[in-house]
Length: 438
Image 1 (cartoon, rainbow, N blue to C red):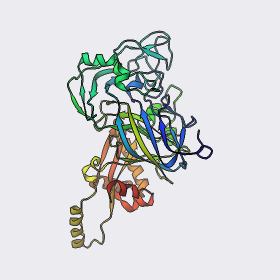
Image 2: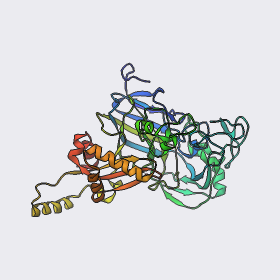
Image 3: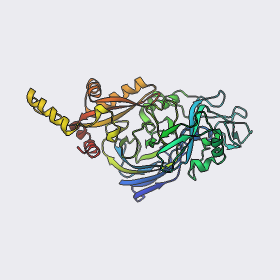
Image 4: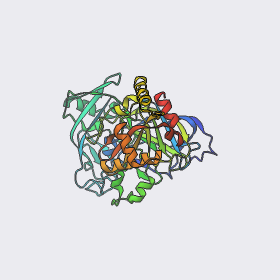
C-alpha cells in the first residue's frame, strides 16, 4: 500500500484496475494522489454482470482504491464529480429472483454450483439466454440470479435517451455482448446482455447518469455492494467467510454504495476516512434511475469518471454528506431567491426579528436494514454534524427539506436548509457556498 511518504504523490491517477468485488483495507492501493489532485477512472457495469459471475464475491465490480495524500483516519475526503460519461452502447436489467441452491446464504457474496458444490466457481459463457453461464468444473448452468421481468436497452449516439428492444434485437446484441457493454479490458464479469431479456420492448427512457458506488474503503474486508447499512445487514451472522457482527458493520462501513441519483456530474460529496489514505473507489454507474431503485436494479453501464479530490480535516461523521446540484434538491430545500429574501426581510422588520439566519442546503445520507431505520440513522447523523437535537433536525427537514429515498430497502437522504454558521464550524460551509453561489 502506498504510505504517502516514500512514494511520490501524483497530480492525477488514471485507474483501469478492478477489485474482485471485495474492498480490503489491507490490499495494496493505487497512488498516492496529491491532496487537490484528480482521479480518472474507466468503470465497469455493476449489479447484473457481476451478479451472474460467481467468481466475483461482492455483487459489483469496483475500481481499485486510490490512496489520497494527507488523508488520515477521522478526516473526510471531498469528491467533486467533474464528469460522468456513459461508454456502453447497450445494457440489460430487470427485476430478479434467486433460485434455490445456487448460493451459500447470499447470492451476491457466495454463489455456488449445486452440482459440484464449488463456492465462487470459475465459469464461462456458452450461447445466450439465462442458462448461458456454465461452471468450468462440471458444465452445469450456474444461476445465482434469474431475471423475472427484464429488458435490453440501447442508447442513442448522444447518450440522451435509450430504447428497449424486442427479442430479435436483444438476441443480436447478446451474441456480441462484451462489445455492446463496452466492458473494460480488465473487467472479469460476464455481460448481462448475454441473457437477452426483452419483456417490455419499445419503451423510451431518459438517460441521467450517476454513480451507484462512490466513496472510501471500509476499515475491514467487505464485499463491495455490502458497504452500506442495508446490504451490509445481510453479512450479519452469514454462513460464509465474510460474516460480521452488527457492531462491526456499524464501525467499519463507509456507505460507499448509495444508489442515490443525485451523485452525478457537478455534485460534491464528502466521505468519511476510516483507513489511512482513504482508498477512494467507484463503480456501479447507472444510465438513469428513479428514486428508490424499486426494481432492485437499473441500467448498469460502463463509463468514464473524473473526480477532483480534497482532504477535509476532522470530519465529524461516519457516513457521507452530499451537496447536490441545485436542480436535484427538493423544492423546500432550495436556496431562497432574492425576491423571497426581500419578502422575508419585510416580515423581519414588521415583527422585530433582528436577523434572518443564513441557510444552505445539505443532504446527509442515512443507511440501515430498512427505510425507517435508515431515516433514524440519517437524522442522528445530521444532528451530530450540526450540533442539534434530532427534534430540531426533524423540524428543519419538514419545513425546509425532505426525506428522499436513494434505494430500497434502506438508503435515504435527509436534505434540508441548515444554518450556514453550523456548517462553517465543521469545515463544510465553503462547499455549500461554492455549490450554491451563496
